[in-house]
Length: 76
Ligand SMILES: [Zn+2]
Ligand SMILES: [Zn+2]
Image: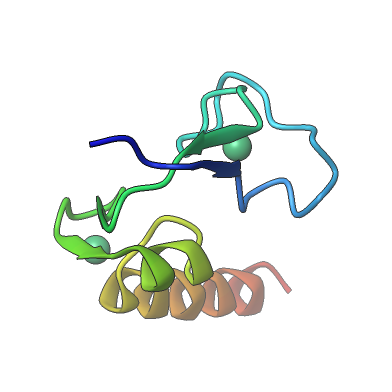
C-alpha cells in the first residue's frame, strides 16, 4: 500500500522545518497515512484531526493550548 507524500503542516508553507520537527524531521513533507499517533500520548487518531492539531489528538491539543495560556499569565 503506497500513500501520497504531503507537505508537513508545521512549517505552514514556509518550508523551514529542521530535524527537530516531530512531524517530518526536516524533510518538509511526509507520507500521508489514514491514522497517525498523537505525538503526546500515542493515541491513534485520524489524519485530518492529527493534521489540524499539528500532531496531537484533541485532548492533548486542548491541554497544550490551555497550558500555554496559563504560562503566559504566570510570566506577566
Ligand atoms: Zn515538519
Ligand atoms: Zn494525545
